[in-house]
Image 1 (spheres, rainbow, N blue to C red):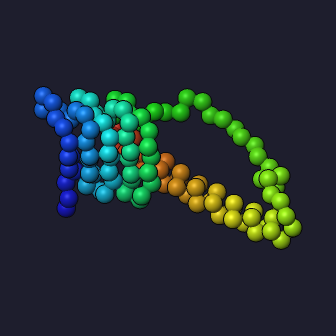
Image 2 (image 1 turned 90 degrees about the vertical axis):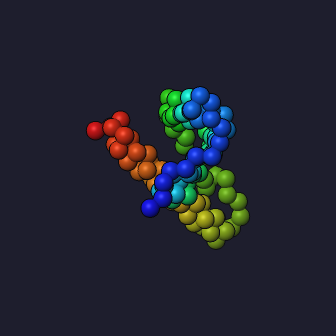
Amino acid sequence: QMCNTFQGFFENGKRNGFGKFFYSNGATYFGFWKDDKKCGKGVFRSEEGCTIETDFFDDEMPKLRNSYKIELQIEDLLEGSEKNRISDLEGIERTIIGANSQLREAHSYYSKQAVASGQIQ
């Protein structure tokens, strides 16, 4: 069984400045710390391989304040014969399905973390 591991700078016994945190489950965080908390630019990679690069504050990633709805008619962007359009649409569909799978994995991971830490009951 592995343990969490930190490689980086300490100040007054707390993680401060740049550091690398290796979670026992295989996830990693490379970024900045302040008073033992993730703070500033950082890259989090889950054990499933999903990577999120963002600014952390008080050990948390920022929450989305607004949601936006974008409607796009992909067919309008495609050119060429009907056969090429169908092939292009199938490729776009595979890409969207793959991205949705990664988003679901990230949501599932962070939901479990919030429940485990008592933030959500």
